[in-house]
Length: 121
Image (tube, rainbow, N blue to C red; front, side, top):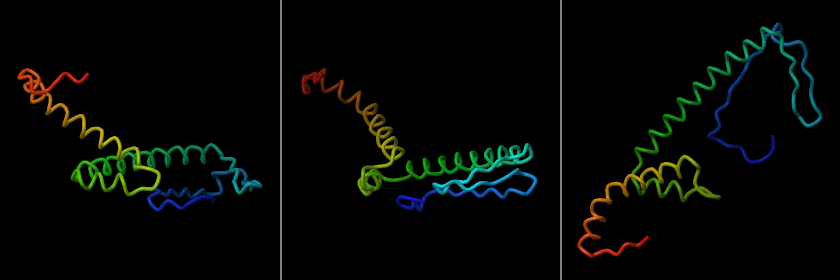
């Protein structure tokens, strides 16, 4: 394995029984070629479905966690990662900004109608 180790990565394990594969071949680059039988293919598809459901549940939990953060906590999280914030953190920040702008629209309209705010378009 090359590159940094991501501690947040979810790991999946697939136990293949002898009836699940025809042969296993090691590649020069460290990869592994596994020729599956029909039984092994069905087992892999079943496990992939379970893994996808677990990933979806994890994403929903993270989304709920991000929504629970205060604005200050979200900004701190966004600025704490070298290379910039993760996409879901940016998406949550953008969602909050859109929500704030929607709530400010009546006030901005009133200020424009009173001549207190120019039309800055």
